Image (cartoon, rainbow, N blue to C red):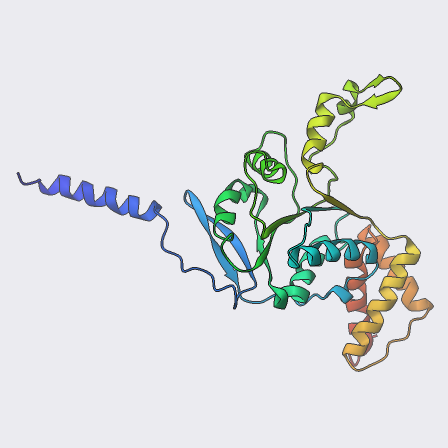
Length: 295
């Protein structure tokens, strides 16, 4: 029985639409060449998209956060050595070096087998698919999700909670999860959350709302907090950056009262004192100082 031309045309259009929805073949990543990848969502799943170059930030460039660097670096070194290590939550004020620290670790330890896969918060629902593609590779992977914040009940929230707890799904031994957030518990906290708290035999017991909110962050083995600098800490970091940038240009830039006052004014205009703000000021100050004809 022959099909009429109109039906054939309809079938061709249906097949063309279906072909568009189906994922296209993606070549496996050569992890010996590419040290990082981004998870890209596509139709019903996604794929690992290799990153060609690593950000130039180094651990020694991250100033004023020595304690935080030590904790995360030691945990990462244990992981690379095949020893027990923890998933980590890096939380605190914006611009204080949380995500830069993870990227600096990759630059320092990529030759020891460290690799990073960055996953957007909304794509954490694909964690099982992601780690399935990593578990047989002879490398150690950090699944890194930056600037994460949830509302309770989100699919990604539930998946991350299960992955960290290991009750339903646990990543393989060559995968750790590092997350950064501006929020200590990754979820908004409201004054009304404390209404369910009660005293039991002299101890404060949180209400259900608070217990649910801390149940996710509590699954991270390591919490590392990042906070804005005091003015003295900020000025010290600015001083170090000015010296570093000037030396990189083969020059010297004086650290004097004029520079300090300008650095303070810069931070006041930005409304923040952090490593990012210090670096931004130092770039501007050193650039202006060394550019001929600019005062």
